[in-house]
Length: 107
Image (cartoon, rainbow, N blue to C red; front, side, top):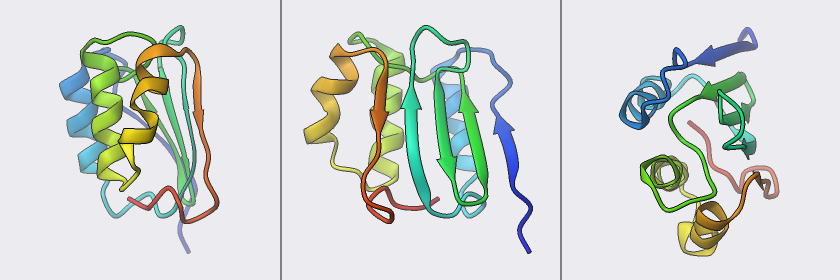
């Protein structure tokens, strides 16, 4: 039995640290259900998965900088078509990403 839990990157707001932390979770999250990104929150990305939730501080949305590009990197790792979401991530705040279950990939 898997215990549902909360993972967080430490809250430093550094894109590379958030990306490395996300990579360290591979195989732990299971199917991804929803991703919420809000650049106005300290923990700006929230990934809801089968086995818990991930809170990341160095990836966000709403402008063309390093943080939103880090968000696109995570989406690509999850197998999500970023061609469709790139403009949404770079130009909007907040951003919610939900697709039919299984459509977001797993990690």
